[in-house]
Length: 258
Image (cartoon, rainbow, N blue to C red; front, side, top):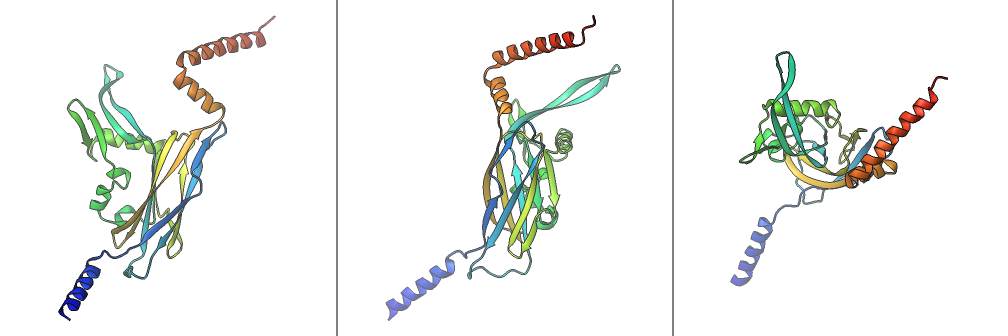
């Protein structure tokens, strides 16, 4: 009897210590590859998702919030500051950012400040203002703060080019536990592999995440010229010179006066 009671107590303790099962994300993309051709003017990737719950999931008072972030391949960028010296604008100070996303788009069901706390946004680098900006330095890599004017200029230029964008209320809920959003891909988007991160929040707490990938690549003649320029630089230069000479000769023949 004593042994049976002890075993029963251990079983109850184990069940009580077992982590509660929580929400799970099921995410699908409208396309996993974007092909850039000569007539490419931009497109959009639709992210569909469902929130899966089970009987063990505790009920929550607030609605769900979803944040979808699309991050492009990393790049190294040199930002320069110009000063006017003796009437001439010259480059003065500069700063090199390393491993910065070449593209960053974030759609959310509400403004990020209403979705969760600043601490969570900073910890998971959600939003352009909370991304880590490593700076190349002689002593290693340090991080640039949010008030750094070089960082602010970089973000401003990226936003003007449409490569850094955000859309509050961009995630909609056709059903209570079904969501969708369309992420705009501009025509000047860099090629490479893109990471799609989906974050599920409720009551400001992060409940679940999901990660997917999409590939953006040049196709056809654009891919041929890109590969030629990257891998056969000398041949690419010779072809460009020949085309330039031929074009000049042809223009001279067409517009020649008798």
